[in-house]
Structures are given as C-alpha cells and as structure tokens.
Length: 201
Image (cartoon, rainbow, N blue to C red; front, side, top):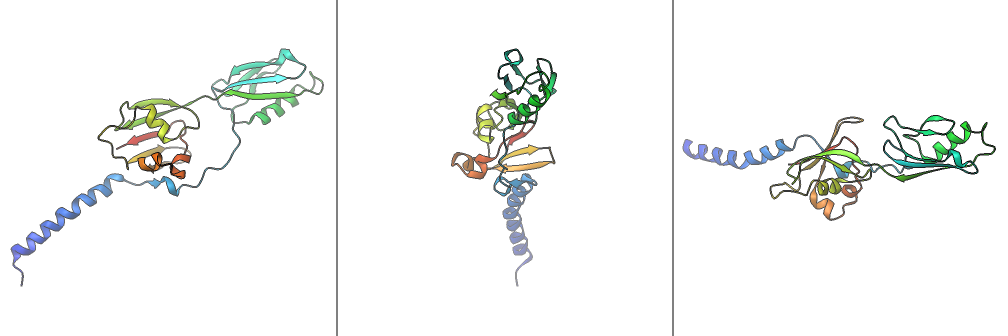
C-alpha cells in the first residue's frame, strides 16, 4: 500500500507534465489549418478600385482613356460620364461600353486592358521585424506579407502563424512557416485579401 506522500508526489509530477501541454493547446485557440481549406476557384481577373485601366474604341480615338479606377469603382469615358467597372472582367466592361455607345459609334469595337493591378493593404502583427500596415500585390500570399514586414523575429513561433479574416464570415487560418518555405501547395496557394490580419505568435 502506497503512502500518502507517494501518492501526492505522483500527482504533483503528473500535474507538472500535463500543464504545459494543456497551456500550449489553449493558447492556439480555434483555427482552421490551411490544408483543410477548399482550393480557390479559378476565376477571371476582375477590375478593382485603384487599378490602372485603358479603354480603346477602334476608329474613335477621342473615346480612348487611360486612368485609375476611382474608389467608387468607376472611370470616366467620353460621352458616357461615369462607367462602373469594379468587380467586372475586362470583357464585361467592353461589352457594357459597346452597348452604350452603339448610337454614337457605328459597329464599335472596344478593347479594355488592366495595365496595372492595385495592391492590398493589410496588417502584420506579432513577432515580425516591422509590425503594422503593409501593402502587397493583390495575388500576394502569407510569405509576401511576412517579407513586407521585415521577416520573423528570433522569438517567433514558426508553427504559429495565423491569418484573421472577417469577411464573408470570421475565419482564423493557421499556416506553418515550414509549409511556406518548402512549397506546400495549400500554404503557397492561399491568397490574402484586403483587410486580413497576419499574426505571428
């Protein structure tokens, strides 16, 4: 029969062994591993505010324009004033302009091109060299955001990188640094959006 002091010692040792594990699990909180997210759907590139676009109408040089899309998603075209282009593909905008200038230009042929893609603004917080707001290209991934923030600090947990996203619904995605540098398809293919927050613990 074990003595009370022996039982107490075993209980204390068990508590010391399990406490760190419980603490690590609790600190991670709820998240979705990047590998469990559905692959992004292949969609045509759309025009967004800040993009530099050119619109040319064959045989109607006066209607040509080259300008940045305003914050309200529009550009100004000769005869048409404001034209909504944000959220549409170049083909959709060309079709829209073609339909609207049919009374002015005979058999119009409209060509729309995105000459320069505007970047996203997002936040990188935690154990990075320069935490704060960064600007990245629209197709940027987590590795791009970390690079824009100066990289990880020596105190960073490389397996505790999280992306916080609020829209269309709250989401917390976990990405491991090793997955990024070793080219894991899910980690590399995950694209950031404007308003995302990257947190390195």
